[in-house]
Image (cartoon, rainbow, N blue to C red):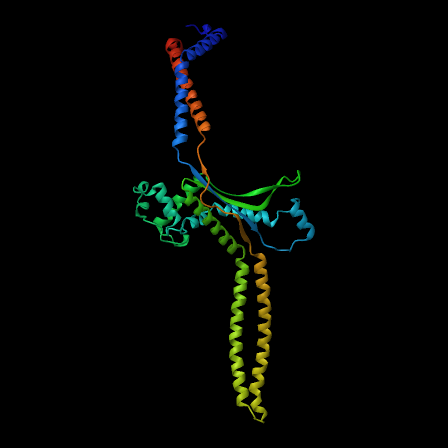
Length: 360
């Protein structure tokens, strides 16, 4: 065949022949489509439902008032610098996807006395898949109750479970947005949620609750760590001063008793010294008590509070696969597969009939 034969008319002719060829195979293509619809329908019927557990909570952040009134107003309107509330929600968001929080939740104990990590391993039957791993085949169950005390097999097993949760795309920690002025857009509202969708509704509920517990406790401790340290230091100083005061007061009472009806001034020297020392210690003690109350007030003011608004309760709502969606997707996929299959056959026939031309 000459190269000149491949004109625009020839292309039109080949295209027409192609569609004619597909029309002759229409029944087979429709059969492919019907098979796909049946496969999608069977999958949606046989697939077990999943259950979404969701816990909504309110983040009451610290009540610091060290910002000017105009700056505070601008921050609330979203026109100034970033407010403390938004920063806190970002911290909660990133913490929620960390191993510290997810792993800590998986190490918590459920009502049956087993860790959530062991429960997840049993549901997914992961031990059978870990038999060929030289480290994981040594794992039996989680004995540690904190991430810092994990053994090597426990740590690797926990890493696998954390990745399983994250890669499932069914775990989410996020905040609800509130609409404000059009120039500003949307802002965080302080309302956040933790959700997880899983095939076992009891595990989904326990896991979400454990994640919330880990988040609230770890975030609260981290946010007030320096203030708590200061308060503990002042409390320790108060205890030591109180013990010293009690000791001096006892010595003072003994000295007064010894000097009873003593007329010589030399006998009063020790008593006066102890009296002055007691007065100084009383002043120190009063100052420490005042500082302790101030430290306690600051500690309570800065302590963030996670308040549960809506928690997951059994039974959870079952989520079934959509018969329409999965049947349509499978049918469309098989339709494309049939068209591609017969397109390849047609192109192969064109290649065979014009092989000499392409080779030359």
